[in-house]
Image (tube, rainbow, N blue to C red; front, side, top):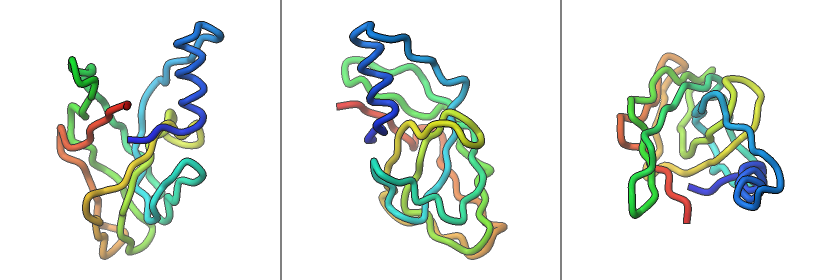
Length: 126
């Protein structure tokens, strides 16, 4: 999962001791209708961010997965989620990381709620 320029700077500052990075109070996932990249989120009609909690990274691979299902996301209209973004706030805040889905999650109306099951979202830094 790629990280954003914001998180890259926070990580480098922490590693080098040049500045103290502030630990996010929470992590919130928002689905994206376009492919998110370092320059843009492409959140589209997915307006709600949902809490996402992770287990400690395992060794020696250094990856972490979500410990509970990520549910409750909603859209304002029919849409297909093709990616996701992780933020440090339920609204506003900083985008931390982003990724694409192996297959699009189609929402036929605003009442459909895309989700990730526990263990389905994996973070690896390489």
